[in-house]
Length: 201
Image 1 (cartoon, rainbow, N blue to C red):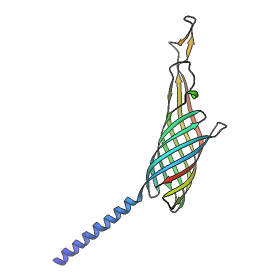
Image 2 (tube, rainbow, N blue to C red):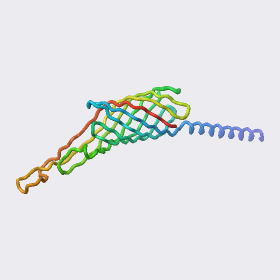
Image 3 (cartoon, rainbow, N blue to C red):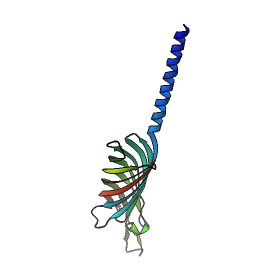
Image 4 (cartoon, helix red, strand yellow):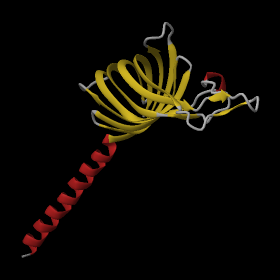
């Protein structure tokens, strides 16, 4: 009987010890990661424009899940994309290609000089959908850091709308027309993006 109890106790102890080691390994697989991205945007405009993004999330084995915030310029239309970032390494090792996909909302943040002038009308700016997808290659360094580059395709929406003032014979000053329909400028920006990525684990 004592031998039986001793064997059971040893098995239970071995089980809990193994489970604890497995959990410890599983915890070690989850790494909090901060990522800085500097990019160049290329589209219909004849100029290149800048993009900056900060992404924080969890790296679990080959997968990364994060939340991102950026400042995005395209021509004179500045915006702030807020998005979910998912990416996957395609092989193990210190050098690996990866694929990524982003999706979220693009908040409009226009400077006064870049807004359409409605001569004092009821002006509003709005954001819209934002998504991006692409592939890249990264180098994992020994000091808990990786450097990489990526290229992809992105899409964002942005709107401006307002009611223009009209000039009436009397009184002699502009005022909004009671039956005027607002002018709506619905921008859909499609462009290629090339980024330098720097991650800290």
